[in-house]
Length: 484
Image (cartoon, rainbow, N blue to C red; front, side):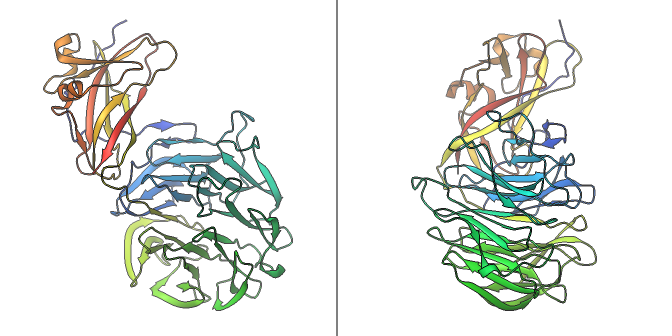
């Protein structure tokens, strides 16, 4: 059956941005591979998940979050980042900045989704092997699960969790061959005592049993060589810390009641903390020496977030009092007002991004989306990055992954031609399922055997679909790329 098609002309750059909608909450493919710096994510007043890249560009995703919840971010060694959040239907969701996202389900265990306690937020960490650890409140207990499934354990429940609190997890800085459980997890138990689960020591009480202030949550971060540090607000409203050596310390800093501190590991082995002081102002604390930061006051009901990066720097992200604008602070009290409004009673997430070394090769997705049709062949169009920022690079090849019967092809329009010519074999390059382009084919499509991409000059391609019905609404291709 013939479909009506819009005329689409082959382009190598500057194609329009396309959002790939996935799942019932409408999660869109998030920002593409990122450049060095810090990524921030937060819930907007519309409940949409919003991301701000290192250049300050904001992406409003199509993901609806549960009200009064916050996302979690984890930077990956390949320059991308992972994200976890409680969706509007209360289920646990995951997203990667390049590959988009989905509801978290362990298919080998159960097809049922994980339900996060209302008003609480999940925590996410990723280790050097790429294993994701999700830690969240569920049904009165803290639930820990690793994706993919490790040691045939679908999930574990190391203990109960205090009402209205959220847990925290960090991936320890150890080698990928050291094996075993290499995450450290922290949460407040129902009796107010802070609990920790770590490799070799199992689950135990932290802070000599000194309780956390009601309704507050701990934060844990990894340091060098498997070390970690934990920060929380005590019942005396003081900032308390616990480290992997078991040392517990009460700092001189007072926190606003009901707020929770944040801690980040630094590249030099130290730890930086951020919190809302008793007067509502933003403070930071480097190893016990606290001071006010940049004269910023934090919106009531929100907390500070902080992250370090591989360049031994750090960034704090908070909603500012008064206008609820997302502001970031870096060393030297450099303040940036993003102009983005954060939902009340929520806290942003921030993570340091890893720069990808020049010459590094890897994979990146090219999602081809079906276009409006008027007759003839069915047109598809895609670009990389779909939106957001990316470290510049070039494409070495494009693969159409095989799926079931090898019964479909994409007819890539050659440079200078259009989809009106898809019936002319001299105007297209045929890429069948399971096939990968040659340098000559890339040259025919893009005018060069190594087409480039960057944040300001996205790589774009158009093609016609040839295959059985029903026609897919999108097709995910895999590109082999090399970063500049």
